[in-house]
Image 1 (tube, helix red, strand yellow):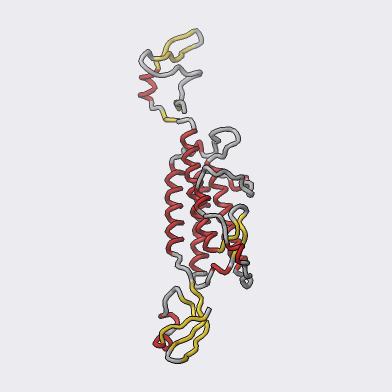
Image 2: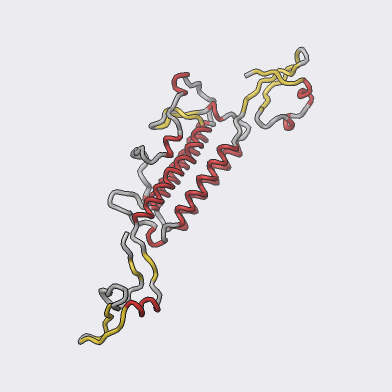
Length: 257
């Protein structure tokens, strides 16, 4: 695209021009500096969305106990571990797709293909879609390691955006399975909205898991009292509170959902 910029810019170094303009050619004519420019979109809104999605998701993930990290709330539903594995896979795939796209010259997209469904639909849980990516069982691990992998995927995303800051990423695009054709900027907006969608899912998982609380020795003594039996010593329920254990002294008390 050729644009007219103030002539005084002609003598300025490229580094002094606005960050949203990349100059590829200078032409002085009739008191104006004619340049071939690429209007580069500001990354700040995308970076803010990514940061908000990441912090919101980690707050929800922190609510899942370590021992229930891989526990499914119901048969056929994902555990928190599977949700995180899915997020890691999707974000890595998008960064990889963007990186591959930038290795070749951008291909023109027909005007009618530039239209797509609104990205906010991705965030809404009431629209259910089956993911085309099956969860990789090799990514399933303990809570600390998996959240570390999710942080690593986000660091790679941010590094890619910083490395390509001066390129017009709107020229590169590929099709989403449900939404239509998205350019690279839109794909990274989708990363944030997709993470917010699964934040809500993690909150749903937490609400459906059985609640496990640690029982201290004092609480146990209050809830049960030892009694002699023919086979030794057993624990009898305290009339005030507690539930008689099946065998020996329980380490945990499971409350109803």
